[in-house]
Image 1 (cartoon, helix red, strand yellow):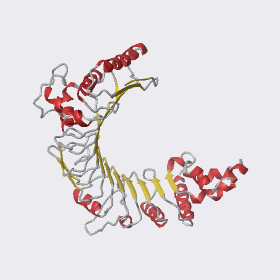
Image 2 (cartoon, helix red, strand yellow):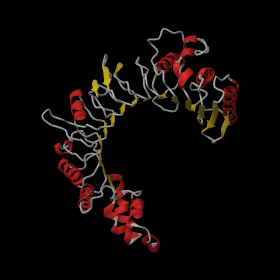
Image 3 (tube, rainbow, N blue to C red):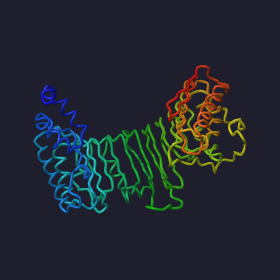
Image 4 (tube, rainbow, N blue to C red):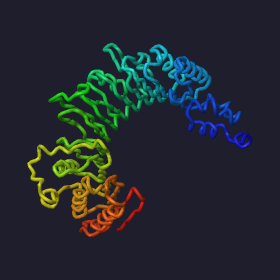
Amino acid sequence: MEDQLSKLPDSVLIHILSFLPTFDAVYRAGLVSKRLRSLRHSLPSLVFANNHIPSYEGSKYIHEKLSRYINDLLIFQGRHNNLRKCCFHLPYNCPRDYEIDAWIKLALNRKVKELELFIPDNRYCLPRFLFRNEILTSLSVTYAGFTVIKEMNINWKSLKSLSMKHIKNLDDDMLGKILIGCPILELLELNSCTGIKKLDVVSQSLKELVLHECTYVFGRNQHGEILRVSAPSLQVLVISGSNRYDKCILENFSSLVEAQSVKCWPFLFSNCHTLTLDINLKQWELPGLAIMLQNCPKLENLIINMTEKRCIQMNSKSCNIDYQEKNFWMSNPNYVTLNCLLEHIKVVKIIGLQPRKGGELMVEFLQFILKHARVLERLFVDIINVKDDMEDAGKCIFELSVFHMLLSFPRSSESAVIVVNCSKCNNRKGSS
């Protein structure tokens, strides 16, 4: 094995090492080959995770062992200039603040471009020198304090991706200052953050915005709170989870081409081409789904995921529509004029269809699509393995019945291809 590895170039060996946990790549791979041992300090990525470091159970010296391990690697890594990514996934209440600051500084001195900080202690605040870095292109911060004082100027002129997770008290002024300091930012992710009321993205570079489980007040609903978002150059919008706002107002979204997991608030996506919804379809949610489709007049790709545990609810309270009819779509002739169905929609994908979770309603919706979508090219239906008391034979009957029903429905597009897939047995049935 030694001779075979010795024949490989350094670039290939470093690539092999990059698939191993950092501890194994540095301390264990050298037992296999001396060549690997000589390259252990040339790794392009370092991941410091406590669960990857062997330790004696109950050892009171785990803190010192972790500190020595990180210090040794970062100092030795200083002899090389190829460190691209550094991740700190630290244990709760283990490292001291000044040690974390020193590790971040060592990583930045190595001119690292991607930095990931998972520090499960809200008492720790990011050091000021981190906010003045012109080399970082990607930054992810989880749990750490994100305090920005008024006098501080942020300079992240190379940052293209910023992810903030579980950050408390991230108010509008603080977030605005951060965005001003990121002139070429393309992706902004806010996950389980609190304190946001107005997100005014003046940046012309931001292309993707992700809002997940955000709320204005931590841990409870604040009645009457409105989230306002303005992003003139945004192309992809993802709003998912139980974002606890009564209403979301989207302003100046003329460039949006893709929306995902969006609650059915009354706004218009005039240029949206791709829409992804995580819903467990209910009878009373059908008007909300119809309004969402009406608000996407240029929609080409529709993806409905029915497998998520935390699915959104389509808001139908403002609809003056009778949705008690047996077949909602066929009983409302106004929906036949949906521009996205008649002129633009090409691909419809249903993931996780189940007989007892909106299956019948979804089949009726697909019947409506087949009848009115003039340029439909592909209809894909994925039926998952349902964990209930249905026998295998019953499941197969449901799969076959869905497939034959779809084939029997009239189609407006003669070239439409129908594919029905069963996730359990990977049996795929298709017809054109």
